[in-house]
Each structure stands twice: as structure tokens, then as C-alpha cells.
Image (cartoon, rainbow, N blue to C red; front, side, top):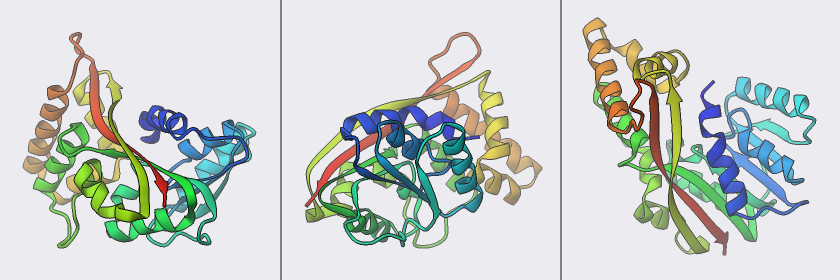
Length: 246
């Protein structure tokens, strides 16, 4: 229910990394399989991995419905169930950035990519819509001690720190993904039903806290809303990362 909002970013990334037919491509933290399916449409040998079994089942349903030869497995971004250097391209759209151990997640992306292969990511930036929304979430439900903010993956400094000499020809570009809804309130109602972090915050608050949280979220949505007709057309900045495995 959430992933359709980011399908565009996955299609753009597949073009940016210049996938070629026959390449073996891994979609890490694939959710319901957007990027793996995009790779399969480009005649790649596409594999998706996610730690939520229900999402893997939906991804398999989508592949079957579209007659695409993508395969999907349950697995953890911090401990990918694949051999070293087993993929030509390793991609993750707003996925690996949410792993609790950022260093381990980055190391796994590198490990399963062959030397000379491509690593491609899309990560929300701290200053963009989602970076600010996660900041609001954290004000009401702080993350566990020691967990670094996921949007750090959307900064050049952190990406460089995470990958270091393991990659070369690093290319970074800021892009925007657009979220649309009938209104800011409609957007919030949708996400409070389907989006795990929002559900968790609301479950931890009393009625007054829930109202304040909703108000703060909608204020952030309106800050980035470029619609002037009462609907929501919100632009969310992200950092596109493309690098070659050393």
C-alpha cells in the first residue's frame, strides 16, 4: 500500500545504473518488489530480498501476475543470504537505509556485488520531506539507544563514510519523489493505517498526543505541498547514489 509511491524512483535508478539484459540484479529490502520487477522488465535475472514474509508473498504474486521471471526470498539486509560477488548490480530503494546497523548493511551491499559491478541506492535526505517527517516521529517516539537516523544515508558525508574505498566512481544526485493525495489529512489517514512507523507512534500516545502528532505531520506536509487547490502534491527529496564496486 505504501510502495507504489516510490515506484518512480526505482525506475529512474534502473536507468541511471544502465542495467543490461542478462545481468543478475539484487533488490535489497525489496518490499513488494518494485525494483526487482523493473529489472526483470529489462530482461535481467532479478532477485528481491526482504525480511517481511508477507511482502515477499505479495512480490511473488506481482511477478506471477505480470509474467515476469523475478524471484524473491526472505532475508535480512544485514545478513544477505547470497554468496560473495554473486550479482552484477545491487540496488536498494529506501530499504537498506533503515537497517539498524548501518555499517553492516552497507558492507553487505558491497559483499554480494561483484568487483566492477554497480551499487545503486535511493535514500531520503535529512532536510527533505521524509527526513523531517522521521524527525517528527522521533520527537514523539525516540529510537532505541545507539540507532543512527536512517536519513543520514541521504548525505554525501555518510555515504562516503559507509562505503569508503570499497567503491569507486561514486555519483550522487539529489532528486524528488512526489506524493499525491486528496489532502494532507487524507495522506495522514492513509499512512496511519498502513505505515509501520506512524502506526507505532500513534500506539504509544494518548489521545492528546495523537492529535498533536497528526498536526505536526500535516504541517510538514503543507510545508512541501506545491498544490494550490486543496489537494496534496508533496515533493520528497532523496539522494540517488550510484557507484562501482572496487
